[in-house]
Image (tube, rainbow, N blue to C red):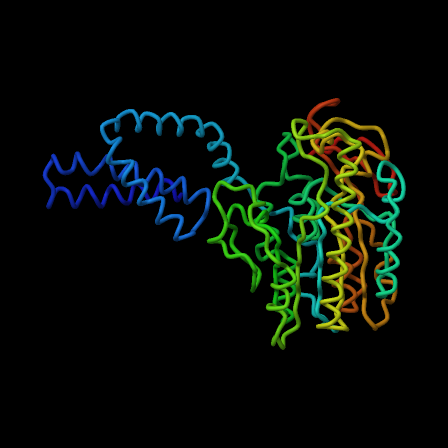
Length: 442
């Protein structure tokens, strides 16, 4: 809307002004300059966001450029029209999805939205992106000894959940399901669309999880290292986020900035008397290269990934120790969103039908470790196997209401297939953890 409303508004104001105060000759002089200046301003704004110094420099440079090239105004307008026509085929499907998209799939089967907590410790959900389960790291294509970090977690009284996995293959599809406590099946079983539509709006908006915490008197905090979850400037459901939407580039991919989460955490937790819920996302270790053109081959990709895993371990130790310094009674959850895809040459190979168990688990295997605190767990977590059920189990524990466990979602893992089988959504791992290949239908 920015690219439509600003130019239309400015030129309408100019048209009205020119009729009263400008001659035809003056109008014909100003319009090309204003067009070029607005064009350069919007491109700069798209790339850098609301950064005043950069925008001011861009406007000054645009003014000088516009004065010199205004005689080519007709060619510039033609170029702008060509650019608009190129984008139009991609824009129309998005507009259609925007009008037809709904979140009915996220409606809860019970009254969990109104659950009342009997325990109200601070809750810290830490998500290291693409961190496989501890049981999977030592086998398959990873072949990595992670015992030093696992010992650290056990010494800190964490419970490690072996064989835990995600239900979906990407950050957006996995987290949108986790924060809604429901399966969405990509909400698009008739096409190979890569992500759940409006996933960012769900994850950082007032989703069922955020709503439950707020209703129980919690301050909700979103701490991000990068702006990946904010790319479409979703309406913020959290009380606090360490990234302002004005910092986010319109044309960026979400990896341009690098926030200091430890510093931001210290600022967010200080002098706060309310119970706190934190969702802390660290885009590390990540995963192997996304596309074939960037891949160095599976062996080198594995080495590079494991280097990032070691860095992730060091950072996780830092954040855990910082949390414990501030709060010795909080519940700390380390939960990844998907695996690291080690064993593939590049991550998009996951869209090709696979039969190798270790490759499939490399997509979905996710770390889960929880420090439950001093109170008795009472076996609420016996059925905790996949991301979609994390918060339902957590809410059952906090409310001491085991009836919430009667509506756990199925522990299945789903993927999008584009090659090797008819395009569509497929169940890849069943509730028993067995590799299958069952097409999902509406």
